[in-house]
Image (cartoon, rainbow, N blue to C red; front, side, top):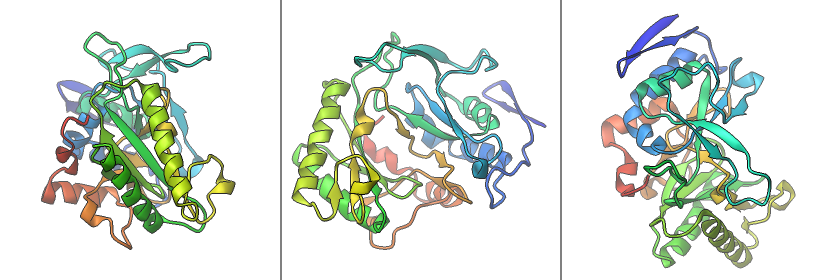
Length: 293
């Protein structure tokens, strides 16, 4: 066990040498990554309730989603009860979500074998209420027979359509198979309205490009095509936070913000070492995102 003293808090890191990926990437490596990327990921987590995916026994043993704050969480970890499905016709469900606001919070989460952070498209206001979304997201997910190159082609179509609506799209290679596109919003529309608008955009594009795009849920519809997933704009849904690690394979990958000129044939997902090297050399692409988050 080691003890870190970040932000004036003592955070115990148990079993730092325990491998959580088949390539030997350990819990201690996860802690070190989140320390190193803190200045980039903390603004993406700011004022957003955090859903986590934990892998206590390693990625090869599977993980689980966690929304509630554990009872054993330290008193200093910020938390707030929220309605998990605002605006839904289903019965309201209250979840006590944690918020990660500093390096100590990142370290404590990493010590719980949290590999992935997921956040919604809305934030909490100064009085604790849920604001209208300040961004939308389009998740481009390739079906069997398609890959990241096809997602790049789809991203350019989505970018053009968002541009027609006066929205600038910002790409993130997801760390999985596809791409996420973000666009900042002025916060005047409700989450339900943004959800419906993005659904219509996806369905229109799929109708115009039926051989390469699909907007219908179900893997059977995706063969050789890219699914334009608009559903993550629902008020109760969340998306892998930019700069989070992903537990998708034998080695860790990252939901990595990219520049459009990088999105060329042959582009690949990035790992943590590559992301940190890019940050040191070129800075944070999300600095161009303006008020997002």
